Length: 123
Ligand SMILES: [Zn+2]
Image 1 (tube, helix red, strand yellow):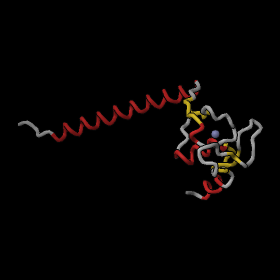
Image 2: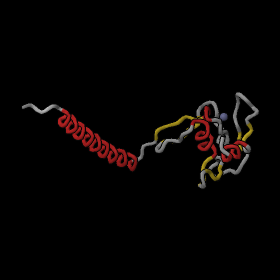
Image 3: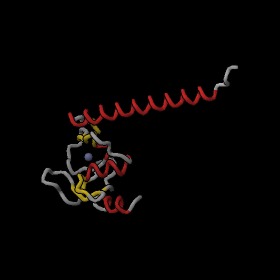
């Protein structure tokens, strides 16, 4: 576990196993836990999710999972990851898809060329 993760958990009471893990650090005006994470201001529940699952996918949001409604609870199982697709994300995804398609076409044509060169020449 990284030192940053250790510092994170120092702000959380996880002794209450089977129940909520309440953030004891700074609180953002929205009511969610707040901290500096990877050098940037971040919500505590998102950082916890990233520490535990190893990822916080771009274009996704965390929503409270019933019955937990506590914004300060950072326990990952008490949150649901939802895909949040904004018009900007759709444009980015489309651009990436076109680029990927071109890359794949390039690979296929190079492969075909390579196979033609491998073929024994007739006569
Ligand atoms: Zn909870």
